[in-house]
Image (tube, one colour):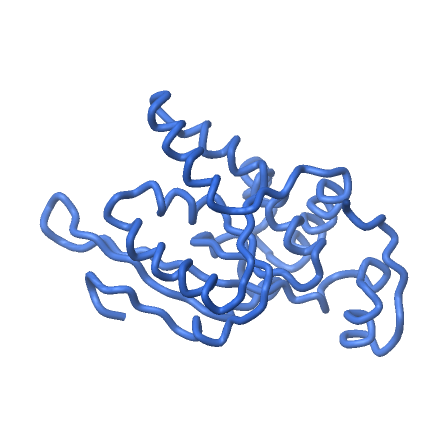
Length: 205
């Protein structure tokens, strides 16, 4: 992946998906040096028939790190480009379920319990959909074996010291074989367990 250029892998293979953007992707949009590069990747995803969404919890996360009213307003304008996903009872339930599943998958997960609430809400929103993907820079929490990388890319900028700052982003798919069978849709239960299952949680509006 070259410096100063938009570099991607497998992005051209992502078509017709619903994609939830993590807060970290919106922060890239707010960075004037990263904006054009991450924007090119997002534009390509939209051109390929993908729908892009943001969770309402992202607004909270952005405002938490905004230093001025102008900064807050600028980040809010970025969110207007993408379809909002409201915080529903069902999504909170899946966030809690995802927390339990990932805690069982990742040996060091217990060390991050105090810092991952919003991540779990965003991840739970993805998992609830059954077919959605997550676009994020955060693979410390969202990583194998619970999440699989389908595509990735890099954005770069020059640092104040004259070197290069390199940041990677990823399109992730949740591995539903890690999810208890009874929480899967019939299609996913058939794929991973060879039989139907009843989704215990009601469908979100």
